[in-house]
Length: 451
Image 1 (spheres, rainbow, N blue to C red):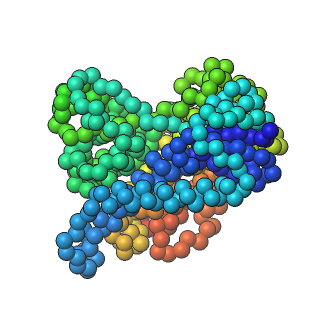
Image 2: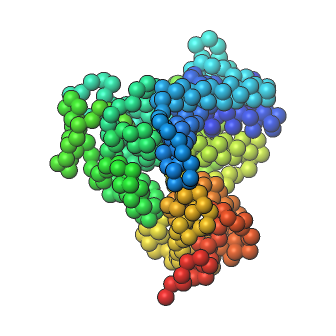
Image 3: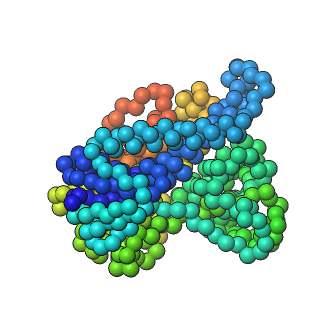
């Protein structure tokens, strides 16, 4: 009998497996596709690999501003696609070796829960004391009214297998998936139209992030519609419910993901609405069965899944209640410039009638931004009257790194006043954090004081 059986080897499942093995537990890990799950094979790593190619290509197009000369700059999309697959394969091979090195049994078959202590595959069955469901999520496929070819509408999985760029594409949704692919395609010369059903771009973000994204889209010549849905598709023509229409070669679904909920006989006995219902320790309504990562819907991000994985093992082993908080999970959208945020938005604070003060510091006030020719963006910090940071919202080069400073502060209840004592290296983008912290008291150094 294994101490733990884990279904799914993505960032939730494999981290739980490794942490359990480090604690001396015996583990069997099931994965029907690829070790590393969506993040490694169909999400985070492939898209970031492509975005890096796009970023370098964009830099090369502007070399003359830096006093450098290059001719006949071009790209090979097939090679870009091959590279993202090669990167994922290399990491997957390394990760598989790491997992096996901990003595974890890997079963590369579909796993079905027979009962609370038995997991079955087509070839065998495994007896376990505890079960962790970490089956992740899949693209939310939308069927549109009208008549169009089967390969006209793509998912975020499909687009990674595309060998030729379309001349034009309509992207449904302006979340992380939609924005990152819009940036990729527009950089590579594709005519992009983004359609968002909510009132603003990147709906979960602070209003200032959304407003700046409008400017960035316009600068990149990305067309977009908000408060809009696709009404129907006829051939290559997409009709929107705002009365507009456009001819396009492809449509990409970037409107979120849905949990994978096919895992056997116990599916009917688990409490499931849209996601698997769990308590504060990720336990389902069945005592020895837990659900972590995208499948519980608490926060559909890879790093969130990994944190849940560590917490659930501590609870199973020691009964230690977890400290996971969605409010402390940073979100990052990649590309140029990066977008990152954590905690409450200004509109949330207003809706909840929470008193706050705010500071807004433009990246263009940094020496480092001018040296790098990366002056777009800002840091916005929201705090209460005692200096507790309530939320931070960043558009900037290196935003993904800067947001971690705020995540550390918020997680450890480090106040804005404490951060003022930190000496920030110069010149860096992180100086925008210090300046924004100082700005909460209207004492930022490198922008004029407010009247």
